Amino acid sequence: MQNIAIFYEIQLDVRYLSEPELEGPTMVAAWPGMGYIAKISADYLRRRLNARLFAEVVYYHNVLLYNSGVGELMPIRHRFYASSPHNLIICVGDAQPSIPEESIRLAEIVIGVAEKYGAKRIYTMAAYPSEYENEPKVYGIYNYDRLKSVLDGAGVKVITDEGAVNGLNGVLIGIARMHGLEGICLMGDIKYANVPQHLSSKAVLEKLASILSVEIDVSQLEKRAKKIDASIKKRLEIYEEKMDLAPVPDKKLGYIS
Image 1 (tube, rainbow, N blue to C red):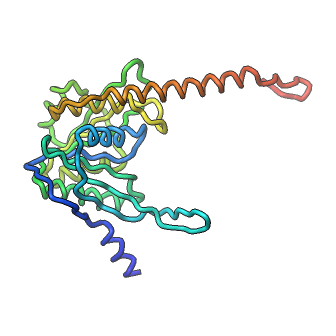
Image 2 (image 1 turned 90 degrees about the vertical axis):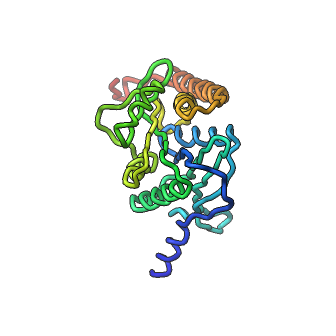
Image 3 (image 1 turned 135 degrees about the vertical axis):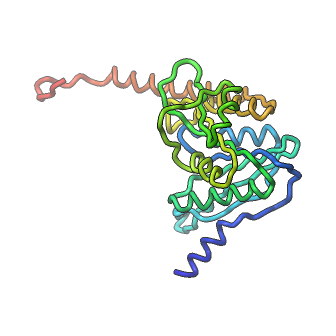
């Protein structure tokens, strides 16, 4: 049992691949969640800014993958990218931690990377389930009252109701405050929890880019959103057509409609 504990601890260390030139950068961090808003946005941002991988945390999830009878543990990677021209660190994780203790531990490690380079503020993203009409809206929460002006300036509505943000996209903001770092979580409207919400990611990313004073073309996200919406609409039409063509039960069989 002792060997397993040591192995687990080693796997949660940060492995640095290079040392980027950063001076008091801002950090954006994201992990998969409802509507995949956070991960879609962070991955899109790092690609558009040509951010370079400089560090990673690799460990093994509690899943055994097998193929042709051979099983292997599933590696999970949390990668750190840097864009020196924009003085930005972008952290993107493959998956959410499986237990609360692991979530807290990983959040501490991410904060450690932020502190190593002198970051003072961290942004995360999450979903806000709602039955919105037309365009998705963006909401925000923060870990210090002084950050309200940041959201107001970007036209982001501050959520005043009680609520919770599950997973690392929320936990990291709380851990950041414990370390004296500012934290903001931007949340976008979503209609479907298990379908990639590119339009919502676009809305969130536009607000984030505005706050960071970064120019980024988000047109590709809108194109992807239209493709997914068309696919959903087609599936609904097929479903409705099948329902219309379904035979009406014979009353003699005792069905009640």
